[in-house]
Image (tube, rainbow, N blue to C red; front, side, top):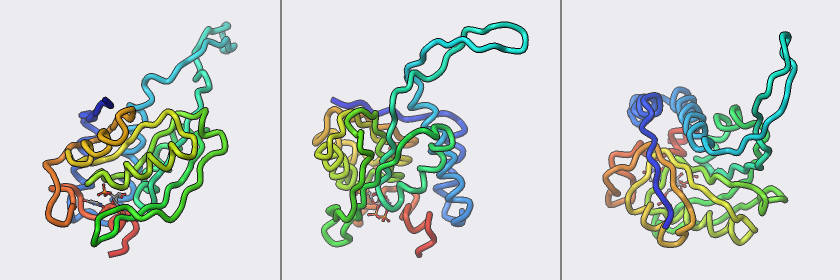
Length: 209
Ligand code: PRP
Ligand code: URA
């Protein structure tokens, strides 16, 4: 069974509070989502393998460590996942980016697929699927299924806020996927919005409401 990791770092929690606040406008919301995504990526990549190299400092040779070159892929779920990409790329500029286009049908709440494009060497990459909201889990579970069908093997899911229902659904369908979140909230309301959540992540990021 996959694990759930909740990041309790004070900076992540502080920024998440401002992200949740309904008074936070689009510009600040977008900046904060990028910052939290970068901080979460910093935590997620803690176990990246290193190798030793020697560099010449102005004083003497130094045995140092660099990343061992494990390939990473980010896969934002459109639209709202896009808001997290740039923050992570600032830390890990060599990561490749795939895209999964899904939206949640407002009536059925089931994910509707409209786009998929992955890096050509997807099988060799450690993939991080990113989406700010894990609500019913329908979108994330469908995205992970699409990625697996396109050859993805090593997959993690990173979201800002997860509902217990979404965690259960993703792990019910994909027990090999670890979930990383900044918070696990109480649950879902009658429209399957996360409570207390942050509202509609895509609309708040892109100012569409
Ligand atoms: C939101 C969010 C997730 C999905 C979560 O996207 O970004 O992708 O809902 O809900 P679920 O866990 O119940 O599937 P939305 O469908 O609103 O599309 P958007 O990002 O284009 O706004
Ligand atoms: N999608 C969102 O953007 N917010 C929620 O609370 C649930 C799904």
